[in-house]
Length: 109
Length: 113
Image (tube, rainbow over all chains, first blue to last red; front, side, top):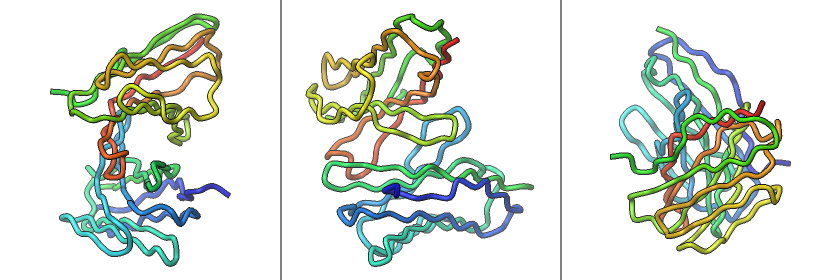
């Protein structure tokens, strides 16, 4: 079993849709949870960062962490074609960072 | 001003050659990393350096050798390149052990022919 599981997609939605991206993990030591966005032929860029369980909102993006279920989510409201990218979850703890495989998202105009 | 810069951006080379990729960060971070991203976009840690000291060395062929002359630079040297080494290599940096996320470079696309 991989430490971090993420459905690679691809996921295609119409513009304006609500997008839900998810990851599960197995290591209880993870305390910090992140989402990265990676455009084609670019490096990943940090999109959202949360500590332990709870929600965090930033504009159209909401990150949720449920440590009891070892499950994290990223919601994108009113999705735009510019949101088309690969989204990678990541989590860290005990000087260890692990990435999910990434979900490729396409938002169609 | 690029925060994490790596060169070259593209590298095409023949099997058996030796090549180097350079990375520099101007963020004042104390930890730098090399990641390999395969065709399926999976990011795999290769090495991590904290203040010039190697702290993570994942199962990587010893043909790969990192070098950190100072905490702002981390280079990757690859000997005897093989077809399977073709991938995108990302340099990243962080502070506080990376607990708050990494800053990535734009990647070096290595193609071995």
